[in-house]
Length: 261
Image (cartoon, rainbow, N blue to C red):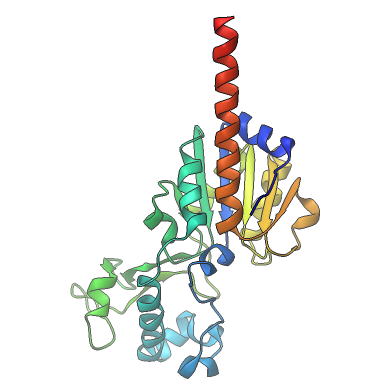
């Protein structure tokens, strides 16, 4: 695919010191991660709200853990896609680069991104509800019954944000600070309807950032962005990286030529 990005977009990125990428389910979907509501088989009769909340877990921890164990196994077999890897390469071009994600699949970290703020948690982590001790997926998935803490006997739950729960305060505060100081913000593969996370791109724009949306379809955010790039992140991001690197090489060669003349 041949896409020519605007000079305005490339120049703003080339001049940027701080860039933030805000990612949603569309980025993970390209790796084959099922959407939260995209389950089938036995789980098709359940609404996510009926399983992903504290009350459901306390009422029937075996059922909730069976659902999460199935999702954990699916995600463990999935790998990052070209969009994830392009973000890793983009990180190396800027003084400050952060990924803020609504995804819980850990694919950004597995791809190599070093500064990732997970607003909705991480399905590869677990912790005891009573004493807070952490457990890996290897610890959990090897158990044949509902996981309980070896230290205190408390129930162990996935380290994800359930319905009715607040976002993790530290991750949220880091995200807000990154957004407020961004020169460019990329909103990628998100429908921009889940709040409070959906408010971050608007905060970035109000703080002076050049706001870019990458999505196959227009969203509620689109009318507020400076650039809308229609397409999937696995296609758009590698092309954007390629043209940005080419532009930087041209600028470098021009500077070298000027020095010699």
